Image 1 (cartoon, rainbow, N blue to C red):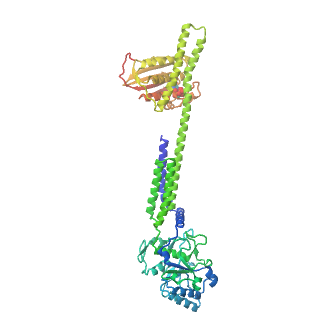
Image 2: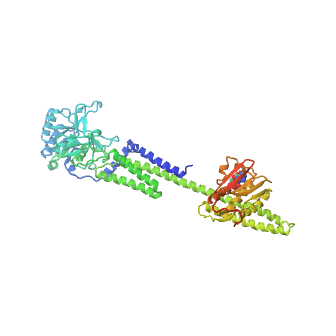
Image 3: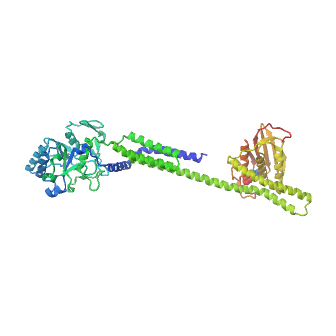
Length: 620
Ligand code: ADP
């Protein structure tokens, strides 16, 4: 039988292997992916707003609610737009990025004014978007050709995640016939006076900047938000029209102009915004600042992620194997804290660690080790309960073993009370009574010794013992016990010397004799013999009793095992006697065996190893 503890370890090892195999599923699934994003969002929100060179290079011009109220309705008339642009151009910005799609022709006079205003800027990026009406074969909504001379066209698409939050932007968008870069990328290119972007598999090079946007991820760039809405310098379009804005605000900067008025509808949800979301121009500004500051956020490669998960798993496995109780819980908390701190410091140095996946791995691993911990506690409880029951049985067994000599004492004392008994007979009986009660004490001692022997705390007191003397003494008591069933005990014990604990060995032989009496019919015979045989000593007790069914024979030496027939029989017992006989034989370096035939009788043999030169003849 496999030891339950071993089974538990096997189960634990199995669980951890299963967990390692399940790690890829744990790491890369939509739910955990979302979990990762939520964690990164929290960290991004906790970060203070950045005040960097990139942020300082950008100014937003907002067609806000006030502008709409005064100069609206939206979209603003092109003549109004042109008037504002003229004023901005006078202030000398380096780049104008217009986040307004002007694709349909308006009144020619107004369109001319607008084209004229745009020509006053050294560099202009105009917006385009893919039409949504035929998603299978989308076409571009491009700016008016009259505006497009001296300008660059860029796309203004956002790339919200499945939860609607904008965490990244696709730097490049294509239709079947044309491909456009993102507005922020083009604005940065013009700002840096860089040439056309150079594409590599893992990055896009813009001037001296290498942007980590992989080709197989549609050139997706993670936006490193400088902070919530308001992180960039911002001027209301109405203030420009009214001449309130300072021209110095625009000098040498990238001006991103667009609608922020709530009626304009150009707002999206982002990890750092709340409530009404973030305006489109602020998102473009954040993309541009990510590029200008080279503040890129990169996720670790799948293999790095797997290695980290494997490390966490091995830590948990180590804990499950070597730590218990609060130490194990402390380990889990420390790993959880390390994951969070790692995420925080990782973010500061541009790494987006998958905190969600790592936490999921930790949670599952700790749940597994928690479950096995629970299993261990249950196992310990069960084994202590079993020990308690065994102990209760033993107490019963002691009571039972004491009962046997007590019955004899009672019988003898009744006889003594008979006044017709001759005086010498009375004296002999009194002597017997004394010896029998002394035996009781000895039995108790022997029991306590066996208890201690079983628990490993008893050392046998072995010394050379005359087997014949020992058996004579046991026989005297055995015959007294057998007389109640008119059973005779024959003896044939040669004078052998054995190395033994006399107390315990006589206890074992007496037990075999009383069993022979208990499980034999009246007026039968029992024999006690001993012989020295090929270097060992055999002590044999045989009877003409009921015998033991073959299927029970291997089990009668187990503690508390009784043959079913005897459980309801007249002979009381706790099934402990033979277990003690076996224990005593084993402690002497020997063993005990049984041969039995139903209805014919049984033969028990205690085999002791030869430990002193065996001598026939008298010795003590
Ligand atoms: P107990 O006698 O207290 O029941 P033991 O451990 O001494 O416990 O014996 C275990 C069982 O083995 C007994 O209940 C009985 O069924 C069987 N047994 C033992 N000795 C004999 C025997 N000499 N003849 C037949 N059955 C025996």
